[in-house]
Image (cartoon, rainbow, N blue to C red; front, side, top):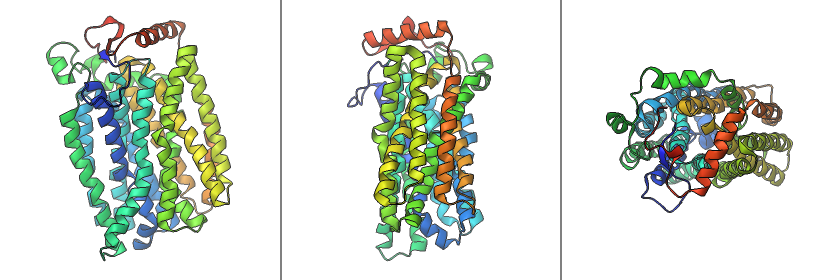
Length: 455
């Protein structure tokens, strides 16, 4: 989507401009979504005992937590095109808070599985986060903006691993049983998500020049119907094979990160004889790399574009993801705790850089189908997590063996980056837009447009 007045720089301490308010609110919302989405993961050792779950059942709940997100991510992109990211995000946060608070009512494998399935819808927050920053930032900085908001959002995967066991421990220290403690602990992220949904509505707007409803009422953008509808956006994106190539690529990076978020704590707990709190702290290191690693991916994607154009973004994506696969294979073979932690951190660096590099490409795939592209590629991450989940559901495979197979799969997925190609005209056009944004001041009017063009 082409919009006027996109920001050409990221001013981290600017909380007044609409672009930077969207930047800060979107990463914060996605960050806190992880507390609802994966808040139960570091407590699974307790839940497993309380509900008498075997390994296969634990694996099924892991799959459920990411499976529904595939569908919701496919739907949420077109909804952003139709209603705007502000309304879409607020609705998702408020509705998503309900199953998070209600998971404590689970008293069997079936009810727990259903709760995790419903909670998985919150993971669609990522698509809205990337959509919102894509319409707020110019070509010279959009890769870094997308990567930073997503990375600081993904950081929630690490802080969740650390904070939720502490919340649980604090509740238990009051004399409450562990059986009730994990249930009460999950009420905390539910309340946070509900409040955040209201805040997102109040403090953000859809685009630099206003909300979609106001812009349509003023005749600045067309009504969201026929060729300009959200579903038309989805159809346009779905017809582009390059979008599906990035679907596979994102399955091999974000899908892997989601899987590690689900299994890391219990993996260290079972294999290295550490207690639950220590296992959560170690697992948290994986997610904490998001504070800078995904931003690095977006930054180097933008830097590659400066010297090699859009093809530079493709080449960097392949390199980062290939190294990710090698690092994951190495991690799977570690038998000593310090070595396992070290290789996990290296792997974490490159998996998150790969994610940033992926969404350094997404805004340039089809600007008139931005929601559709974001939704499909974002769904790829969860589709990868679903497939990876079956590796850790099997009784015949150890967690280490599952990680080894997963690492080999990542190497294969990395080559799909080369399916993303651009015509000579598009390469020249985007190079000119990049140079204009780099030379301009903030904000700019993309291609001299005074008003947004249709999605």
